[in-house]
Length: 85
Image 1: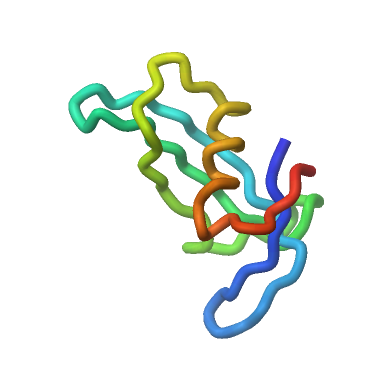
Image 2: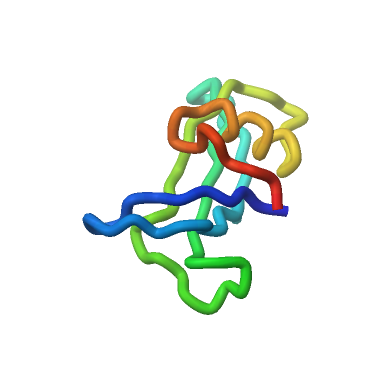
């Protein structure tokens, strides 16, 4: 499970990047769910784009899992137009 979307990376447009969730953590102190992603050039996962992934603070959900996190990420401007792969 991942999201596919083009990104701008260091001034270059990289098409069809593969965005994968690597961590979902519930943080009661921040009243948020933290989701960490990594980004690969494509689904082969041979060329990770350093600094292209990120940490996203999503609404607090004590039952958060990876599937829920992907749904939430697609609602963010950073992942507008992303498709499930």
